[in-house]
Length: 271
Image (cartoon, one colour):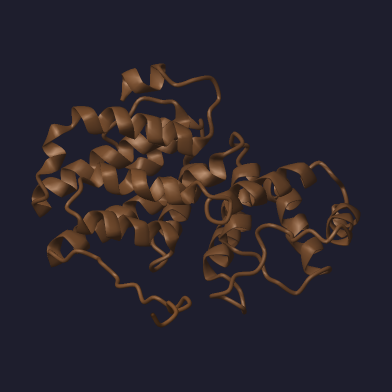
């Protein structure tokens, strides 16, 4: 992992860093071909620690992953606890696109590295992981404004959708967002949280859609002073734990995921 961190180009995106590091590690970790449950626990631990190292640039270590991230981002105990909460809340979310990909790849008997690399590819799309990055950018851009309302109104007048608000599964509000935002208020001084929470209140005066987990991760990143891309970094590290758990469950079934397709196009003309 140390070698792959040294070989990374300057300032790549979190997912590109993660893929590069896992690509190197997959080639070296030959024991990952053993899919016995006891071995998978060790492989999963190495993999998640490598992801944390990839997104922070700090070498991996044996401590819990939230402490590894906190050290890489130079956070105090309060910041580390907020990171831990976020990782837990994003670890699993049913069979969304990346998790479904993870299970399909695991069903072929591929290693956990192949599973997570495939899931990261799905996460890299703008309609999945890109949502966290857009929400983080929105919060970071509006944070210096004493009144974000006019800028938000201009955003809506252009017909653009505000990133980080609304979720088809949670019309009444994303409980993950509520938990992260509440923890922010409880765990950090007002001077760190007032700016980002003001943005959420300003949005609430303009639209009826409540904040989702992407907005909450963006607020967490900005309130803690993390580097751009940290919202997505938190998402991918936390979700990787869920991908590995899904992979282990899929390995245990011994089944290959192979849906059937039904032709619905035009029939050939009679001869």
